[in-house]
Every structure is written in structure tokens, then in C-alpha cells.
Length: 246
Image (tube, rainbow, N blue to C red; front, side, top):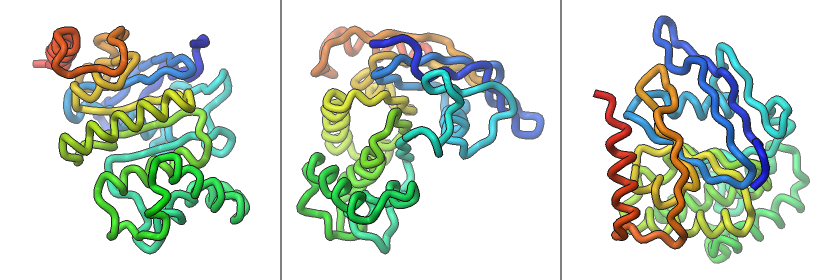
């Protein structure tokens, strides 16, 4: 992997008197899969919203390839934990929506959306509406929408938190396969330690607010990872212990 790709430098964010992020820095290399974990409510989502430009940081800088991160200039894919599909659009139209707001011509975005859905094994549901899809299929369509813009970096905010265990493991494996195929850089927010250990090249453990990095852990367990292996269990227990702030 190359040197620093995404740089978060001295980021700060306050809400009235509450300091959520203070002098926070994190460097991510191209092609890394980085999972961020921490206590509930510590500010993980606020951090991601600052990266997305959905929340204005009070100080600091966010650089992609050494240039200020701009959603207009950079291709950034974003998947949240909420249901964000447009109920009046079918799966194909939802998958094409990110390209639409970027001004991609209709014929091109339709072709790309169809190919992206097919790549995820969803070619047969292109004409279905969200209400006709399972919860896991809806998440896959949201992923297709993010991937269709050919993102340089994929930002994911607890996307599978509401899935049952079986669906989560299926989606984890599909995400890892896509990561392997595309080489996309991933910053993944989660409160699920097992999820982090299963997916990540690096696990960033945050403190309670204002957030700081308690541990920056490189994960050397080879894929495919087995949640019953001793190494997996030991790392899961270590991360769980680090999250405790009381």
C-alpha cells in the first residue's frame, strides 16, 4: 500500500459547550480498510459527518491525496445505517441516483447502475421497489449506489447494525470481496467489535468525547477470518476491553 491517502489533521468540533472532537488526527493509506470503534455516543458519526461535509468542522483540515476533500471534486461513496433508498424509485433508479446528482448522462448512469447491480448479484431485482426487497437487498442496493460513482473512498456509518447475524455475515463477505476487486479505501464506523475484527486491516479505538485515539491496531489475521479462532477471539476481547472508558 502507498503512503498517506486520506489525512485528517487537527480536526475539532463543538456543539455549544460540548467538545466532541478536539485536535483529532488520523492518516489512512490508499487501499486500507479501517474500522473505527468506540463507546456509544462518543462522536464516531460526527467524525464521519465532518468528512462528508454534512457537519461543518470548527477547525482542522481533511485532505485526500494532499488536496482538500471536496465532494464536488472527489468521488466519495457514503452508506449510513438509516434506510436511504427512495421509495418511489426502483432498484436500478436508486443505484443510479448518485450519478444523477453528479450530472452523469441518463444513458451512461443507467448502464453503469445495471452493471453495478449485476456485479452484486442483483441483476434480477433491478425493476423492484424498496418495499419489494429484503432488508439485506436494500443494503446491497445502497452499496451499489455508492459504488456506481466509482468512489476513491467509501465512508460507511454502521451500515449493517440493524441486520440479523446471518445477513450481516453475508454482507461482510460481499463487502470484502468487493474491496479485493476494486481496491477502494474504506473508513467504516461500527460499534460491533466482532464486525471490526472480521473486516479491518486496522482498528482505531476511540476514547469517549472529546474523542482521541486510544489504540491504533493493525490486524494481521489472514482472510477468510474465522470468528471461532483463538487469534480472532483474543483480538475481539482486547478491543472490547479498550473501548471501556469507565
